[in-house]
Length: 127
Image (cartoon, rainbow, N blue to C red):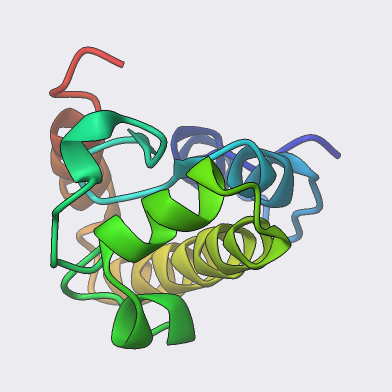
């Protein structure tokens, strides 16, 4: 179906869709891009070589609970397959959490304003 980026997911939900299937979260993960609340993050960047923080502080996935950005960057620099898997797992969990939160916002009657605010933050980096 091709709905696999965070902004696409929210746009689809706003139009009533509730079923999604796409290779984007895993393909992006395998290529070093992690979805975060502040927009996509390219873990291959040298800026992360000594960064002890997780990909996303608020994420409950195994990747974020266990590994630092520096270690993930090392895995990609060393061409270790574990890095591809860890970013893919994070991206899938990120989208599941986003869809769950969207459902809560719909139930509370706040989806439109929440979605607008969420997308503003996500796109603030100019990505």
